[in-house]
Length: 551
Image (cartoon, rainbow, N blue to C red; front, side, top):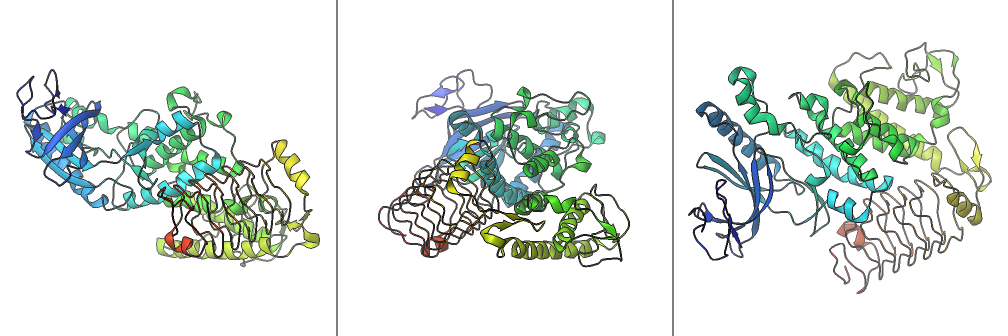
């Protein structure tokens, strides 16, 4: 079929080889190049079409966005033209990112504006949830780890997307990467002095975004980068619950979405979500980097929970934790105090850094932004190296020492299964080395930074399980279900993964030296060629692309 792009056409469907529309007589080859195939969507600003570029070999698919201002006065058309050209230039710049559709063409014809973009084949996250059900917490973390760097890139180019939602995120068929679509073309503010109320509405009504996903300041036509953070938070709620914003309850006094009652997530992830969903833009994360930093601290939060509220006593001024010991357990400024342990002081440093990110400087520093940036970077390095060394060091009696100096006794395999069966699925930092857990059902469990050397998990159900930074050297994971598992920075050296299902698993920065991946299914997995070159593969290994063969 061939589709007529004339907005006034009463019957746009035509036979494939027709040159002129049988209903309105319009040329079916737009700009003597683009042949419409079908309509993809329609809104107040115009419509989107699937088309073919007949000027290129093979006639590749593309997407045509047709923009039509509701008002037709010369003044409005000129403003639309200016904004359109500026936005097209911006889209051309950000389209260099592999997770943003490339801008192929833009032009004006018959007082209508056209953008031609790369066609992305795949399913939207909205379609995924409707087909497969809601995501787990680990799945949403993987989603954020892929989307937040993309958002950083977009914002670094002074672009606010303004319409982030599950329907605008496509998992590309070829490589399973998420692609952000539908940037729109005239999503810019119109200065009120340049147009009357009706003209301003004509150009900006559709730039507000999608109700429920757009925060208050965006609905008031004052979007900022943090507006995209709110929309991303609402998207996370949808992924966790399968419920759209219109199906959620809201606090009548504050306007906040009451989402917590519908999900089961860790306390720390809940706190990150709450800050992403702050109605007040001043109290929300201001950019994607802040969210990434908050999520990056997660492995340490549980082990430091006791230290965060460790009693303190007045003593001499202490500078070893970056002058951060002047925060009490509520995050307020108090007198200079010495915390009861080095780990407690490090916990206070993390608390101070979080407070500083929201505008409170616990150290009383008044230096410029460059000085604050250096301090923040230094703290991050110190925190990770010192805490990791403390938590991964040898423990007493074969247990796992937590940050308060206590020792967790090493559980037996039966205790692990029983604990999981009772709904307690957090095994963060536990020492489970050498346990026999073959064929155990531990899907969705949290083994972040756990010690699992030589553990036997052959044939176990580990779907959506968190093994981030876990030590799995020489573990037996033969034929285990690790689909959508989170294995970022995990140590899988010499691990037996023969026949394991690692489809869509997140293996970024995992150590695969000597790992046996013969017959493993890595369809859609987040993994690099360099990582795979260190592992053993054979003809039965399924590549991330879905093809079999030796790497």
